[in-house]
Length: 291
Image (cartoon, rainbow, N blue to C red; front, side, top):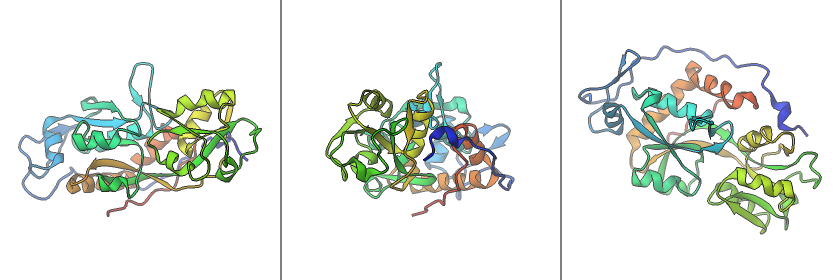
């Protein structure tokens, strides 16, 4: 059984590079299309892309407390793989990083924030599932995670998988897919607002484990000073997508186009290398689901 400290990346995959032309959409371009780094961007009038491009600004929902994927640094600036993916999408709208307003989203408020228009999109370790697709739409996936279990280093409780948690206390986050999944195995679930809040409970023995997606646990374990380890046996599939309004098919398809370009030209791999790649190996490229 390996701990997360053994997952340091040894090599960076090389992907083919494609030259990118200015992003366009069918139909008449929006007036006053903004430029970014010398590129002019034109989009069909009245689309979300045109609106955001003309404004030169976008509001993006992200996690602020998840190492490697979405966490604010001491200056309050978000960092992580999700953040870099969001910046790639904004750049293809002609919006520089300085034009992004970051809004903290937690598991319970992601759908309401999208539906109300409080954010233009959400990139926040957001698992695509059929229930959520009833109220919002997803572009992606841009990463495939899997739910795992974090325990004290040395695994004194001998937990090897979710079956070992039957009748035992576990911590996770309220409103997450992890919460729904683990309740199939134990009725002793403590649900808090953030995953980091579970760590003191694991340390004290009040719960035996923290469970959520493996990449989130990897970041928490890496920052835990050797106190924790991850079991390393994911038991679900958690495809991460980018949430947008339910009826905004044009915007969803645009984001899918951007993701596929980023897969091909190396920007996705670079985003991983500069964030989660400090702890985890470069994963396989996901396949976008254009449902």
